[in-house]
Image (cartoon, rainbow over all chains, first blue to last red; front, side):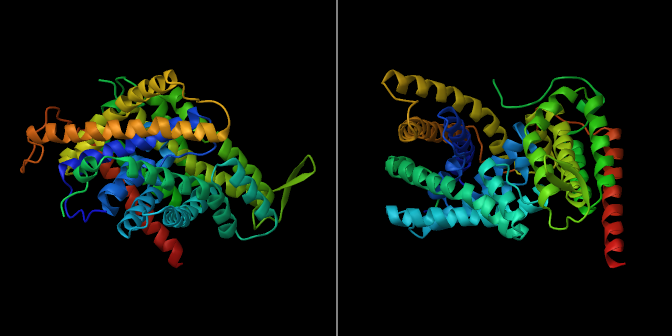
Length: 191
Length: 258
């Protein structure tokens, strides 16, 4: 919701925190045995607080750090994270987080953006698969019915992303609403 | 201070190389394996990357990294072997399912590419202290402000993880259900993440003020406590990498035009 004409120090320290929140989200989700990743909440929160550019940077750095510390494959999905950060930033600017209905709509848009960016990556690197069991089962089914690889891969990705991204958007929205105003203004950036 | 990293302390030739050299090797080897749709090219790079990993004495750790993608790679062989669009020649039958040659070859190509990507980046990750890589990038012209962001992520995540266990304990002692049905577990997710976010944002604000006081936004050139030297070996490796890259691109364009 900020114009972020400048990357202030407050915004720069927000980025590592965003990455940490992504990390913690994933950790909590697996500790609670939730069937989702929930690992983009930090990216989304930073985008809501400080705008699309900061969202994009948080997303990119998130995947770079993941790549450097756990799984080199995540480097290539930095593009998807950037897409998520940018789209959430613009949606927040466009007041698309004001009520539950709009938030749901935003979630669908973000899921679509994430899918559209991920599909070419999946096709190039994995021949269309995502690595998620349910998605890949659907992918195999569609392939056996002679559906094109792009369409199959699109459905493979979207069944996974849709629920995950919509929920992430809702959680982000919930957390953002609960934040004290003084904190929100700190990270809003210079107008 | 605890820092998030897969770095394995050692003193081999690979460890002593400049981090950027290793980064460059990873990037260029990945680009080349993707430029050529050939299993041979991929296999050559996989073999070479493995050689580097062995000479850096990180082979065992490398297997752990590869383990992460093992299941996806296996499912890739099955799915492509059965359903690849250009499948014509049957290769063998297993439990009444026919695997085709084209799909198996295609999945093999994808596998050598992914495996090379993991091993070549693995060499960088396992033999380089992350802070050295960041320092090296800043010395080569990355903005020090971004360098700070990268370096601080690596320190903040372990900090946040320890806060995480504190919050989990605190909420449990208040009677939070972390087991039970899906809905209960979801509300637990909120109860755990909420305090963590608030806590870390407050800390971030304090950190911003603290580094501001220490001259974080000062303009001008920075000096470094740790200099990372560029050895002769580094220079030669870099030159040969650039040459290999240019040759590969030119060769690819020639193949493409012909």
